[in-house]
Image 1: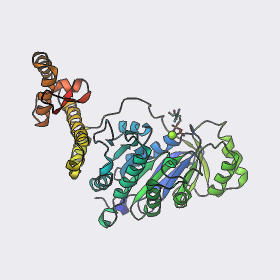
Image 2: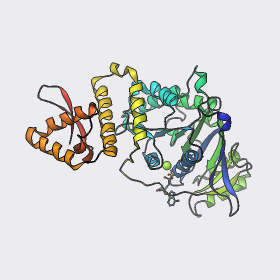
Image 3: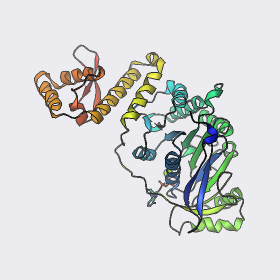
Image 4: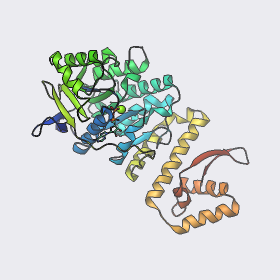
Length: 381
Ligand SMILES: Nc1ncnc2c1ncn2[C@@H]1O[C@H](COP(=O)(O)OP(=O)(O)O)[C@@H](O)[C@H]1O
Ligand SMILES: [Mg+2]
């Protein structure tokens, strides 16, 4: 583990002028939480993704944890391995295991993205986020507090607003304790006031995009410690090229300055980018470390099995390619039925035998069915 003291980088977020860059100082145990806000389309998500990408490029040591609701953040998997926790992910989401998942990702220093939309109800999403954060904070386990970690929660107002909730308490705790625990939170929301004031109180860096409401613009000036007349500058962001922000903070410009974000738009694709072999191995270790999963419902256990099978199929897709194998599985499918052929293939994968499985690589549809003996089997076709 690299010493925390040696980690210090300055990342470039954009241009203040032709000759001056907007820099963000990143140093665990020093850097404070950041809040980005602005109306929809003001490029707040793009800015947060750019920050994460730059952290990772310039200093790969910090662990990255991203809570995602809309899936925009999945685009980062094109840049580096982020294990996806959620439906269609390398690891299924499981509310009962949220705290252990948080703890184990920190212990194993994993970059993860949590697809909260995989959880049906808002109440359960709230609970998952709260417990995961709880685990990540490593209460009472001081030796892990040195491990640097960046946590991104876009649309944070959904989890931390004026009504009380478990996730709100967890986010307030995160902001209050983050420096001690070497965690750097990055939040995004539409307005200043939609993010709960107690959490906002300890935010050290504010980055503000275009705001429609004149009152909000004035409140923003107060926060940026600039004259109220500067509200006109924020109003002017509407007519200027997008991606323009006013920023002030402990780890950024002080006094406040305007800058233009320098980024490439993130691809908005339905397809989830794949991770590497190394990433798949880390996902496997992580899955196996979630030990009490045998106490889960049969359905949940099957979701774990399914994820594991999918990971193996992905792994094989990255390591194997042979026409003969595909032919063999196809032939067997025709002779003994597709179900049996694939169930057979599944066992071969499970036992890690080589030279068998290309049929699975071809398409990734995996489903659960009852076989003739009334037992559940995994079928891939
Ligand atoms: N540099 C860029 N050039 C062109 N379009 C961009 C650029 N950066 C972001 N965008 C696009 O602008 C739109 C809004 O950006 P986004 O970051 O999602 O805004 P917000 O999160 O504030 O709603 C997105 O469709 C995004 O792809
Ligand atoms: Mg957004």
